[in-house]
Image (tube, rainbow, N blue to C red; front, side):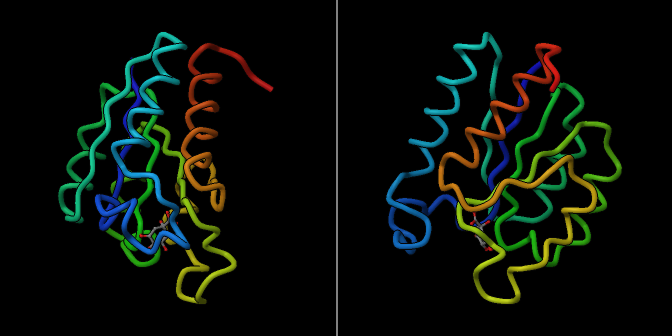
Length: 146
Ligand code: DQA
């Protein structure tokens, strides 16, 4: 089985978008880094980005071939009940990631409507948020537990 990395709105602009918050790494850099990490573990990884809520929902609904979804739902995190419902509807476990620490930013970012239906949330470690999520998925897929 494979792993799906799903990036939400505005993450296509990484590198130039508010670099003081999100860093200067581009989305392509992140995806390449994650592909390398997965390859070392002998696991296939697909990466998708969309600015559209419905496309993210379609990807979650059609995630049957994946053992894990690593999801940065970006701003949708804070208000998309539709994405939350899609996660709740499928069996594929989801790991919620954020580059920034959403708990120490504006109040409207402090709440995640998807957190109650994901396996866990990793927030505030920049690109390492994704890498730690992937590390967890790889450990779980190889039957390792802690
Ligand atoms: C984000 C945090 C969100 O609040 C924001 O809307 C984003 C990115 C992050 O990765 O830190 O677009 O999910």
